[in-house]
Length: 246
Length: 300
Image (cartoon, rainbow over all chains, first blue to last red; front, top):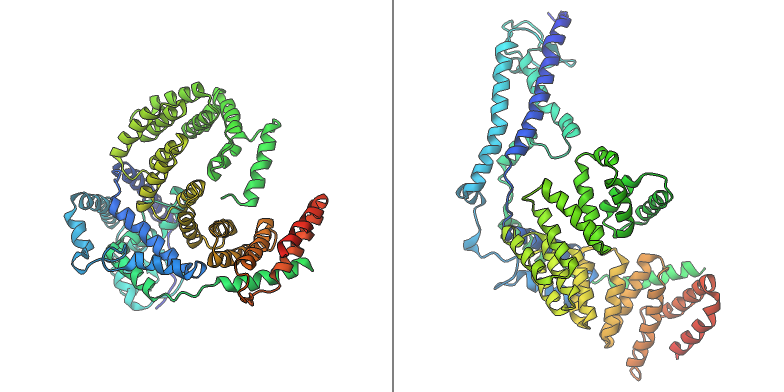
């Protein structure tokens, strides 16, 4: 039966608020630690150059109609010709970004450091929550949920008749974990190391793969049909002047 | 480039500070953000803040940025001892810093000891070969020594790596124009138009270069780009209006005898002439007579 449980206000004072405060403090601590531990990266010239090439090729594609056809064609050849075009990556050389990242010792160390700074506080906090704050109902979620969420949200509570809206403190911990991201970007400014979820998403799609983007730009450039927009401008100038003189 | 609203805000702040109305720190921050070059004012107001220990401690960690800004402004105004003092303070606080090393190099440049400055910059580049600002300082040094061809060479090497830096392309175009290498300058302006197609300044400069190169095809292209400038500025750009008139008369001269009438925009010349006359009537009525004479001679 879905009766209304009355939750002691002491729960709010001693569980919900301290948990949030602790998570905020740990987040701030992590931010400063990551700033200290961050080694200054010397940028790789090849990667910088490739990045700039991509920007330039993209500009060429976007504004191709503003320059005369001859210039556009000569630039296209410069970028995509077979021998020494800037965007051309011969098949054998397409680097597997993943393999490179693991073989490069510096990058591997950096990634490990970043992962550590993320995993350890999470694990510790989770264990602390489980140890101290389990076995009781912590909060009531304002909207009704299905029974499937019971195992996830009501972990310490061993009664199966309690409404699924009443959750344990573990779910409050998870709520804070994902929700405090906005708060952190307010306090700590844009770039902070507490973007766990973002980093997790990044790890699944392995980041910057320069050779693929070069190939993509080259294909895009090959497709572009140059249609010189300037003659139209003459007519438009006429119209503008006519309006101006009137 | 600075937008109009930002410029008016800057001038307002400047007036306020000059007349003793406070707000010097906001003015200096705005100058730093917009990267404008107002070295005398920066020097005067920056020094007034730095020499007052109460105001200086009120800045907190921003104090060092102010030292750097005042040092650069002092070098620009040739007050080299002020600059040296500021750099000494910064060096005491940040002994191993590359930024301070860069300021030292700039001080050597300002004193005119080119060889030592070159040595300082090369050693800084060894540590980090991708420091854009140091590359640019070397190019500036070559330009200041009057060695334009070396400046062009260095800038080319810079652009091979950092080819998306449109400020560098602009500088390169101006260097080429100063050496009258117009074809290369046209290439640079094309790059600028590609990266920022809605800025009328680049269209205008490109059209100027094409007009200078001459030849029927270039003149026709130049006319098109003058027209696009007029379109982008709403007809207010006097230089573009003049450019149209000149182009059309030059095309008529070059294609004399050939019956190639320009069917694309027959009214453009008369429209441009009328717009010019209207503009002159409004702004410089005493020169209107000159204008009508020259336009008439162009038409013939």
